Length: 300
Image (tube, helix red, strand yellow):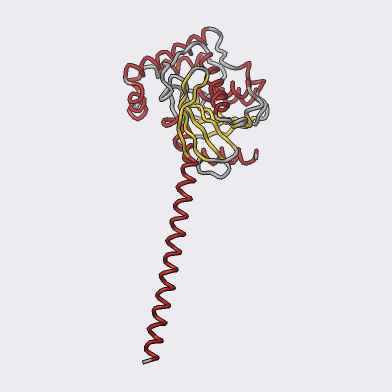
């Protein structure tokens, strides 16, 4: 009988130990989950800041010390232009990525977008700097696509102490005769693919989109008529390391534009995507992101 009681006591003791181990694991899992949730909250946020008279919408991912600010292209938004970059760089150790809707685009309305010569590019550059100031970020790197790349060039020139490095693609410092022919060929939105057209129509409405695009085309034609210069004079003021990416089949930005930029920006390098078009960061997102990350890592 005593042996039976001892065996039973042993089983109860073993069972108690098993329960304690399970409780410990559950507590550990809950703690890990809580930490993960808190980390996620810190790594993702959206909001608005009043900058230079415009209420700018922004999206922040990550919590690293090296901040990247993304400037969209014509009619672009954080969601339409930079989703793969927000997802990727927002999860990388040591990085923080900020994208914003330029004034008059996406969630940064009102006001409506106003185009006037080359001033829109400079306004977006100053807005990007103003947003970083409002967020308390003194130094940052710039990722600019298309019109956003032009604004990135201006931003790096105007605020050399703030811009650590510059990455641009689909950008040009001037408008040539061949560029005007290109813009004319894509001016008719009915010729656009539904994949390109539908999200923009959803954002701005059919009439709003047509008005925006017509205004953009008109301004670039005006710039050409006035000599074609957008920001050629600003390139000499760019001192930061600069990565120029180019899709060699880009129908909007021919190869002479990245060549001109590389020849006139000190400390610049060019990387070509042989089959890439205008949206290399979306079409080849994984390759694009790794190239940019390698460039940024060498700087740090």
